[in-house]
Image 1 (cartoon, helix red, strand yellow):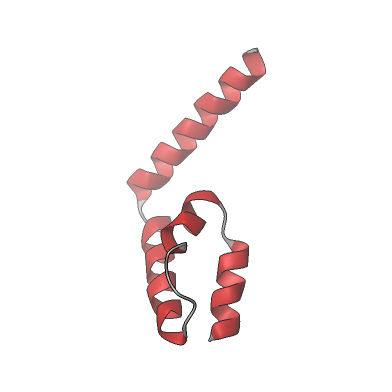
Image 2: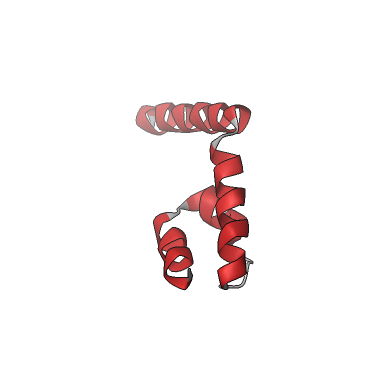
Length: 64
């Protein structure tokens, strides 16, 4: 399981990585980490807000 949690941490970026940043790397925390990440990824409201923020950010950066 330790390999899995290391792989998960290496695969995540930004908000996903922030979710599990403070968890200790243990076998037990892999399941906790996985649940936190999947709950966030399956949250449609959070995902749509993130997509809108990225869209607005990309649009304003192209204008300048």
